Image (cartoon, rainbow, N blue to C red; front, side, top):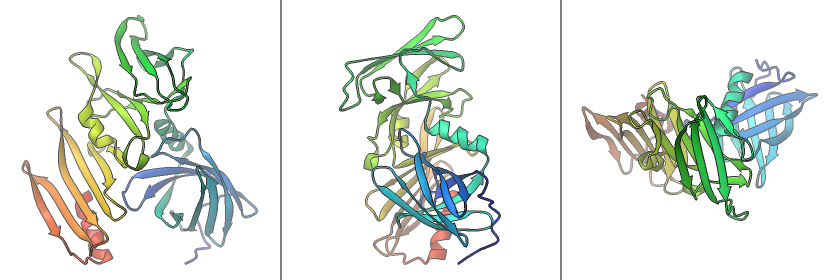
Length: 317
């Protein structure tokens, strides 16, 4: 399949968002530029913490794109450029759809996935708060230590609260990953999360989450939120105000669950279980009038690809 009339002029720097076919999640961001059919750029994983982007290099010929980049090992990609999107496959496993985004969106997504690396020698001001961060007994092998985060009012310098933990992940003694740019419970106030490393399923990104309490006027740790967010992949749908987690029990069994906030509690609103190994076992549940009901329960569905697409559409709609 070739398309020589591509709408992407990659002689100029272009930015793309890569979405995984399996999970409908934002997985990577790309920066591409070509010269004489030689491709150069960067690839940044926005699902799993890395210290920096990886340099990619490759070729484009007759709308066929091939490139490699290196993380722990050499990663390879192969794909086809279409008029509106690029389809690629990473190491013959993850299938990604790349859609062009502008530079502003690219850098916002980069900063969202890689929150500011905080230097402990300096006080850091974000929004209305001054964050003072200290760590002692830091272990260079485990990257953990005894950390104290003091949160103060930016203007008055009055202390609001302290958060202490020995579970926060410091990339090195001077760098802590944390995020104060998202509203996790859709109450129009940003919340906090602190990286705890890669303690999620299959060594995926994990964090401790602190939700702002408007009554106490403090950030309170929410373990219930951590239980759904520390998944193989997780995303927050701010438009529909739902949280979606994706896990797997093995290479063939996949679980996708969607949650809502209701009366300050997290509630499961729909779930999809698919076992691809055994004739596509499919279980779909949705909450209807307050009750979680089974919509599909097919232990040996033998669904075709078109029928499976309808199942996915039913889940997402």
